[in-house]
Amino acid sequence: MGGVVVPRAEKLKYLGSIVEEIGDIDEDISHHIRTGWQKWKKTYGVLCDKKIPLRLKGRVHRMVVRPTLLYGVECWPIKKTQVQRLMVAEMRMIRWMCGYTRLNRIRNVVISERVGVAPLEDKLRKTRLR
Image 1 (cartoon, one colour):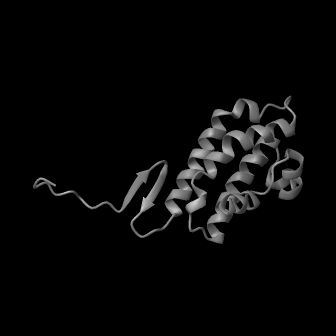
Image 2 (cartoon, rainbow, N blue to C red):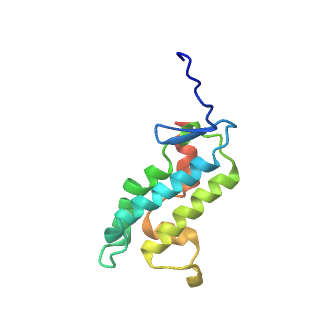
């Protein structure tokens, strides 16, 4: 370009997603998990308030946090291990906002039903099929 050599980039951030030369999406998933935690921390006052009902917290989570986790998922060549990473991150957020830990030995399905949040894997599949 006009005698100037443009350096080759191995990865590029484009429209909020990280595009890698080799086509891997692990770093992009890590980025989405980090941004999901950032959104979660911004709404911490609502999500961790014990006076607010769990269903309302679940609705806030579905409207604020989940879209940042699943942004651009329609075009990801995703693997089961990567889906598992997203599910673990979301479940940690949901457990924290409910006040439960793994030591409480309450199943993820039970907690998701109490909060009113569908499994992330189902939402991911529905989004990709849409």
